Image (cartoon, rainbow, N blue to C red; front, side, top):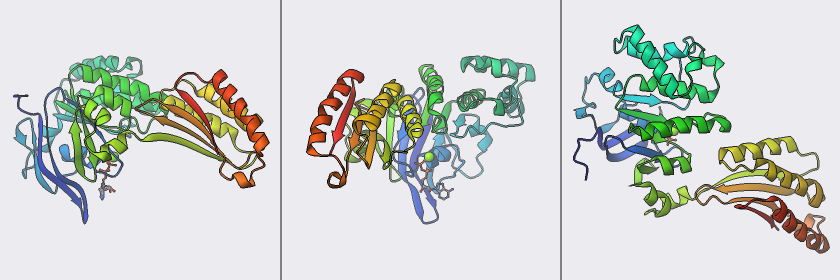
Length: 356
Ligand code: ADP
Ligand code: MG
């Protein structure tokens, strides 16, 4: 299918930390232009695998070939390989004492011996690409998380790597800043750059990737195109993982509950999953908690979002009906109100349930 030599070729890779077997017999090839997302539960070796690929975490056994060269042999000049493989971390790892421009030009000048003027010109072009030319002279502490991560991406690109490895590039960000970073990565994917991305953003993984690795228990459990992994997974563990539901839960046990915390929580949840209904959802919650269900405590409020199907639900759960002051009559009265509230305030795709 693909006759080109792979850029990355991994065979029988294992990694142990003492007794702990973190990577077990990993085998795969990556060809130029592939965008591979690594998904899976935490602790299954995704970061360790990325770190093994550029020998930040040397494997216990097995072989890694980069661009036709075996890098796992003793004495291989790692600086040579690291110029081919860029890495972007969750926590940005910028040099705080350097300006944005210096952060980007440092490696090209000192490792690739590029003339300073040339390195600066390249860096400015890259900053333009990530939308941050105006921040060239700023220090990292003056930037938002999303801006720092875009600088980190520009810094990785400055070495003209063959491959960039991203380890949860948006996990440390405020939800409002996730979008700007993902859009830079999308743009790189379109430009044909080869990338491996560890991510928990399922919808992003689904539409940016040419291939997905579902990792579980130190293995690549399932390797396939996004349609396979997300729509017709072969393994039940893959299915369970990709169909998981995001949850936001609040226990409300008295009248002086922290409604501001709920307000902020709902808004952040809606921004994170791109739901555009934070204010409506909160208005609904407020009306339910303060009016229709005012006398019902304790009460559990749950907001869920199934990323793949896109269904969002708000559930008001009354756990202990025996001890709640809610009578049959009150229930009968509440039901039509809930129904009306739903019809009046909820846009499509938004379900509200009263669970007893
Ligand atoms: P993931 O990125 O999928 O969440 P990791 O690759 O970070 O998983 O970690 C896999 C396992 O390896 C975890 O159990 C973790 O605690 C362990 N681990 C990772 N790095 C080290 C280390 N340097 N020393 C010991 N154990 C480690
Ligand atoms: Mg990790």
